[in-house]
Length: 97
Length: 323
Image 1 (cartoon, rainbow over the protein chains, first blue to last red):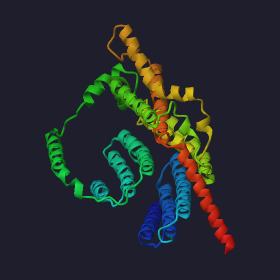
Image 2 (image 1 turned 30 degrees about the vertical axis):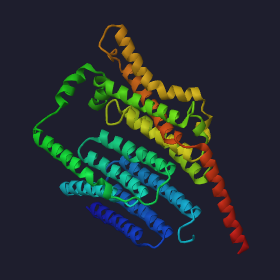
Image 3 (image 1 turned 60 degrees about the vertical axis):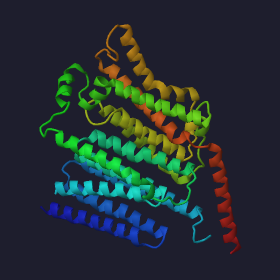
Image 4 (image 1 turned 120 degrees about the vertical axis):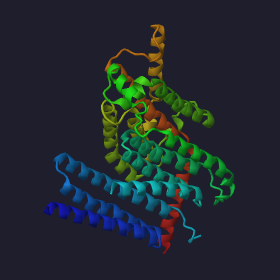
């Protein structure tokens, strides 16, 4: 029972971060801060949801798989962030020209 | 709740399709298309067809996205395209097609089993436990064979267009990228593992040659993108053998059946045979798709680009130094 409530609360927290990340992606003024918003949504939002699902999952293999998924998403989103940021940095933007 | 999710997926599919048509630039259209593929795979998963969902996520969203982005970079973008104006004549054919599809859906019996019963009856004659793989490799081996042929033809066509004798030349590594190398050292073992797992799983659960091949191909593309020299160091003969192996094994199967005076593509009912064909097909799919994704690049172009980039970053350094 207590685990169920905790799990729902954690998933809601994750959803909140995803919502915040999406709002940031839509509203932030420049590419770098948009990237920042996006990666926060990936890391924290997914982290909270994984934590919530871990509390709800019955078996150990499932918990390990969930953890691995989160780690992979972390690796993927941080590298993607670097690649996009690097590309923006090396491409002269239209405002500069 | 499930119905709500289904309706949400269906509506967003239509909405994204509409957005793709109205996208202001090619790049946005491609990114939206990748999103569309991911949502479509979600829809397939909701329809209880994990095989198609896997294939759609891997091919439709992943590799097709890479190919489209590469194409975009190769074709100089002529500014912003006008949308809507020159598609209006397509309206009538589209409506006609939609009407036909709706008609055919109405005519499906609600309790229709389709070919499921036929496949179930045939399952006793095959050595595979999973019906989808049995259909792909045993009952309708033809289709898979010809699909491999199409992939091979595409690679040959690429070589012809680029006027190259082998795929080796474009296999020169891209400029080295530290984060890319770090990423590949983490992802590549996982990619090999997941691909192999999918392939092994195909005998009795959703998975199989195509999914495994695409996952491996993704690994190959990543290796190349990260500037790893390993693909360029691979001997050409090995590369060629890998590309034709799946097609050749099917061909061998067909030829031996003909010699033994049996219907084409009949094979001894041993799991080893069918698994060999499947594994070879996965390898060929991986090699062909990797060649397609990275073979279209002009290696000289990339070198020039990296030089320009180096110069530019050098300029930046100078500017900061001057400041």
